Image (cartoon, rainbow, N blue to C red; front, side, top):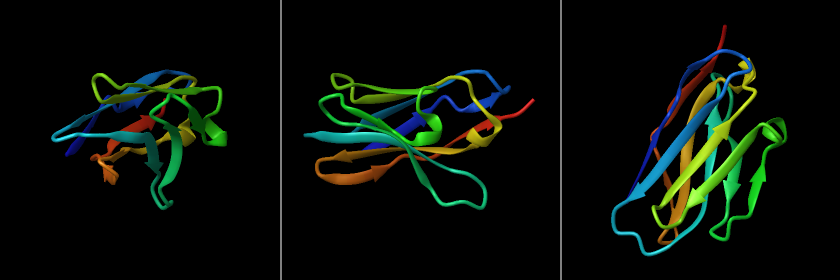
Amino acid sequence: VQLQASGGGLVQPGGSLTLSCAASGSIFSINDMGWYRQAPGKQRELVAVITGGGISNYAGPVKGRFTISRDNSRNTVKLQMNSLKPEDTAVYYCNGVINKINYWGEGTQVTVSS
């Protein structure tokens, strides 16, 4: 089982980016999927999580700006990020509980800078 993330990049403050993550391999079940981020010198933190039934939860700093969604038929999860701020700069990691095992994808860099 693998999680492959894409969509990071450089964006100006106030801009938008969409991160995508696809799960592949021998998949029998996927429960929660989510996004975490780790800024330089900081611990990895939860950004947003979505259950298999579509219930989402967000970290305080991103509420109202980020939207997590998933497509169960394609085993994908997306993170739409709007009104980006410099403090959103981090490596973003996709996470999923697949076949009752916690998996991490490789990180994708998001840099918010003018």
